[in-house]
Image (tube, rainbow, N blue to C red; front, side, top):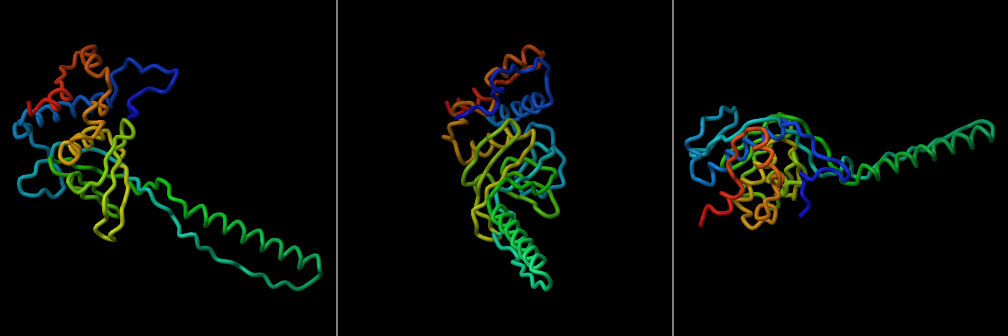
Length: 231
């Protein structure tokens, strides 16, 4: 699978320790505790999200929700013009009306094509069982076991599909968040243990351990611990 952390062709990764590196380092620490069965020893994380009995918040942070959908249904208002006057005026009015209808028809057809639509920004709470996205108009409460597909399509982009319990339709969304790798691993461990990105360690940059060493950040080999936790 494509590596979402790969730099663009002809470019080099900058040497500085970035804010995304920090989130990845923290994610590795959480995942290492998961692999070693030590999550209960982690400090409590405060959240306003409702937690089920026995669930535990692992991380809280910013996120943006996007949904793959159309913004229209292809319909538009056809407008007719009745004009009186000189032949030139009547022809001009009819031509203008036809152009307007054509533009509305094209816009309606374009709106009927699915695309990534930004629904809003909010705060996510990542737990051992689910991810909760808090937003007044488009909240999410997604249990790992209820997801149909998952992937990490960018360093900060977790993508998943599921059956929407509100309308029964298949829904595909993205959460753009610095916790994207953590979301992917938790979902994969729970419901997609043979996911190629999990088994191939594609949720983490291949040089991340070296970067941690270069910047004096103690690194717990989360990917290795995760793949060998049952051995």
